[in-house]
Length: 245
Image 1 (cartoon, rainbow, N blue to C red):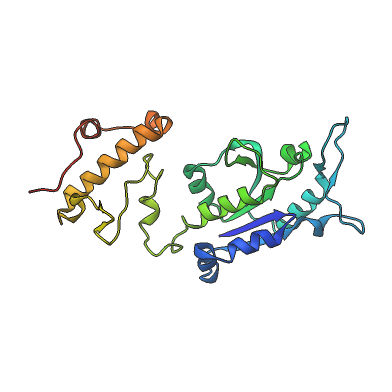
Image 2 (image 1 turned 180 degrees about the horizontal axis):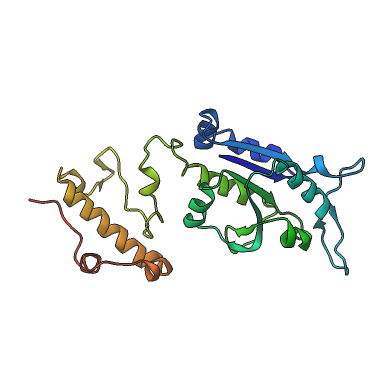
């Protein structure tokens, strides 16, 4: 997969993509991530990428021409690609959207900035607009990096455990169960006995109970959409499963 991030701050993108899972996936040729400097496609000595808004008002707006030239260059081969703009007006970025993007061969992410972008970018140059939350950031680099990280970890071979993405929170509409490691007891805080039973079915039931309970209590929006089985309904209202005696 290839991901191009069109940005005013390529160093910011490279700094994050040079670490952890994304770094390893790049080194293993699972993904190609490129930080594309938008100023390289601006004209004039100062490579200006913004201008005052038509009709007046405060702030600056990203110009259409540099974005159009950058996308022309990135998509010159005519191969299929998905162009995404990060902006507060876009649809919410979710695990489902991450899976959708992970199925693409070429993803281009345009980082919004300033008061926004020229509306012609939205109307004619991008395929999708995405927001990572109902708050305002200085620029689109952080949302772009969130998208890159979420997408890359879904690519085959990016994680050591091929089944890991299917166990994450949101993978099936539920939050993840509690996780523990050694020591078994610390400061009087004990790991639940159910996890030491050696009874795999009992452990899975314990985990399922917590996933159901956590989702119902912490994310009623997810719980309302989750398709529960009769067994789930019975389990979530039952007491916490204990270790088999």
